[in-house]
Length: 302
Image (cartoon, rainbow, N blue to C red):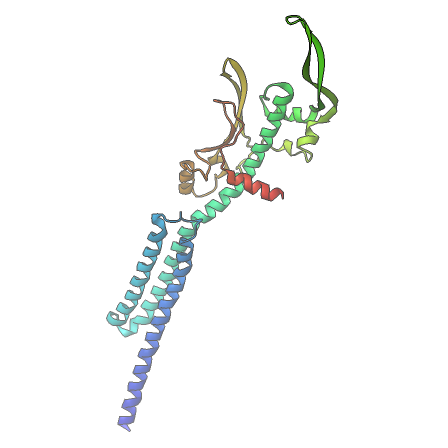
C-alpha cells in the first residue's frame, strides 16, 4: 500500500513538473508571438529604408530579447522556489506583454506619423495648387500677381478670360529698299467672347477656402503670401510665394518626430520647415513637394 502511495506521489510530482514545463513553454511561445508582429513591422518599407542599418538592427534586438526572455524562464524554473514560480511566471508574462506592446508602439509611431503627415500635406498642397492657379490667371489677365487673398478672391469672382481664336494670314507690302512687293506672314487674333475665371477654375467656389490652412489648430489660420519682383536680363518680372510652416500643419503630432520632419532633406519628401509654392528669388510657380503628391492627386481625380 505504501509502495503504491509512493508511486502515486512520484507520478503526481512528475506530472506537476511536466505541467509547469508546458506552462513555461507556452509562455515562451506567447512572448514570441508578441514580438513577431513587431518584427514584421520593423521590416516594412514604410518604417525603415530598405538596406539601411535599421533593417537588421531592430530584428536583432528583438531576437536577443526573445532569447533573454526564454533564458529568464529557465532561470525561474531552476532558481526560484516552487511556491513562488507561478507568481514569477505571471509577473514575467505581464511584463513581457507590457514591454512587447511598448516596443511595438515605438516602431509603429513613425508609421502612424507618416500616414497622418501625408494626409495633411495632401490637403495643404491642394489649397496651394488652387492659390497658384488663381495667381497664374491673375497674372495672365492683369500682368501682375495679387497682393492679398482678398484681392485674389475678388479677382476670381469678377474677372473674365477672353476667348480668342488665332488664325494664320498674310499680306503683301512694298519693300522700299528693293523696290518690289513682298509677302509677310502674320497671325490674326479674334476675340470671340469672355468666360468668368470662377467658372473656368473654381466652379465649386472652393476659392473661398483656399487661403485657410487645413488641420491648423485655429480654423482661421491662413497661408503666408508675399509678392515681389526680380530683375532678369534687364526685365522686371513679378514673383510670388505662398507658404506655411510644418509646425502649424502637424502641431498636435509627436514633437520628436516633428523635429526630425523639419530637418528632412530627401527627393521623396518635402525639405525644410515649410510647405510652399512659388519663389521670391526666381521666376517660378513650382511647389517644394515631391512628384509623389502630384501622382496621388491625379489618382484621386480619376
